[in-house]
Length: 193
Image (cartoon, rainbow, N blue to C red; front, side, top):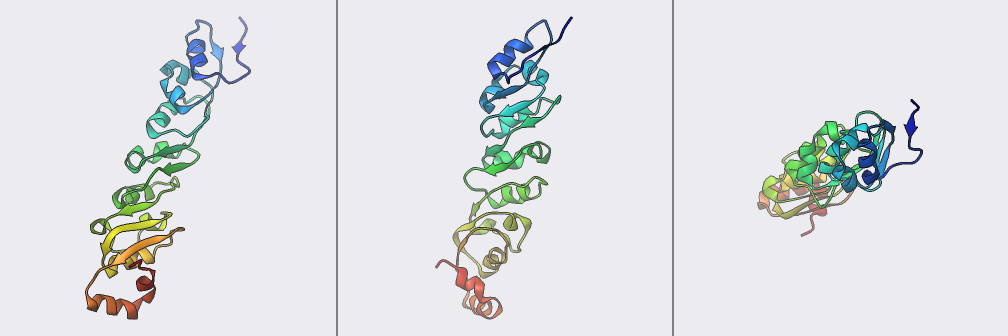
């Protein structure tokens, strides 16, 4: 007849038991993303709210957002491929999103198109470097081209408004470099070699 409600957060293991009860029990979950993701689907969907106590990867976050009855509190950290593949609908539900390691330029281009802000560093080869400054460069923290690049590609990096460091080496024709000295010497001066 009466209501049964937990007045503290349940762990994922406790939530499995509560959700399996024949009596409806009101509860919320607070646990690690791994434990939450490993809980029964019923435990996640019947919870009022879910709070992840540590950062989740994309796969774990996908399980957390199965709960649509209340709010979900979580942050995401994962590699660039998983973040790029996650899509904005999932990422927008996270508090913060961070790429672990570095991102390729291709993945950074996808990630920078999301409405959700994502913290990432770019590290890639010159063949993949962009010929013009884009949001992929502007929203990055650090940008590194790991091999020699042209003056034109270096200029796109130097013109970026990213908040961290830029690292590149220029290997180009004498004509391109001398024109660069005249047009925008800062590109030459920022080169590491």
